[in-house]
Image (tube, helix red, strand yellow):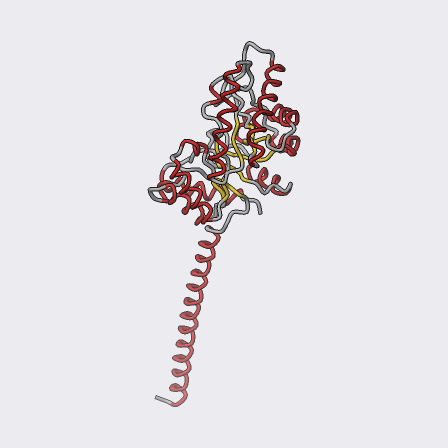
Amino acid sequence: MKRRDLIRNAAITFAGASVSASVARAAVNDDAANDDAANDDSAGADRQFAMHFAPHFGMFTKSAGGTLLDELRFAADHGFRAWEDNPMKDRPLGEQQQIASEMERLEMRMGVISALKGVWKAVNFAGNDLAARQAIVDAMRGIVEVAKRVNATYLTVVLGLQDPKLPRDYQTVNCIELLKRCCDVVEPHDLVMVLEPLNTKTNHPGVFLSESPLAYQICRAVGRPSCKILFDIYHQQITEGNLIPNIDACWDEIAYFQCGDNPGRKEPGTGEIHYRNVFNHIAKKGYDGIVGMEHGNSMRGAEGERAVIEAYRKVDPV
């Protein structure tokens, strides 16, 4: 082989080796970048939510495992910083203590617990029956120790059914007077009753309190720090719509929010409500309280549970 051919072949071989090495290095770098991106996505998926969204028991059972405490741990691992449990007062004492202890360890806030069982099925707050009214006060005394045990501050209160025998204004006064008596029970313990207006068109026909302006009127008339509004966005979308202006109008008396999309009462993004706008709005107004996830999952199983988490990632205020 001539000397110039030998030099040319050597140069070609060297260039080919250099290209191969460069390709190999690029591939390694791409793999590393992809790994980093995957790790970033994983970290982002489990980061804490900015808003205190509060799931409930039964929402993550397939993914979390078999116990209530497993479900709390799963929620905390996926960024949730609060929890709510309407039937807390009906749980065994030991279970209440275990839940409270685990939530304290996980640094999760306890949301609402229900103060009164089945009250929305009967006339009580709005009526004149003295025994029914006294039963409400007695039940409120019974919930105090439960709330203190589980570190709850907020007690859901529904004002029962309308009394068809009484003009509505008299019913409103009855509610106000009975709520004042209940305030005397809970206020010394730094507990807050949150009045929940319920929709009458889909879920709760016949209830007395369905509109946010009436809830506002009642809370202003009671005039106590222990009587505020639970603004359930799902219910108020059905009852009155106009969500952000109504939230603004009631703002001084709102202590708690719950949510669910409409129609269907499933996670945000499954219905008509623009939850990202609503949550951004209340966050900008300075709300740092809890938003209870009082709805079902749109899909069954672990897939549906993952969909719930992803839905809240999309609407979390930024």
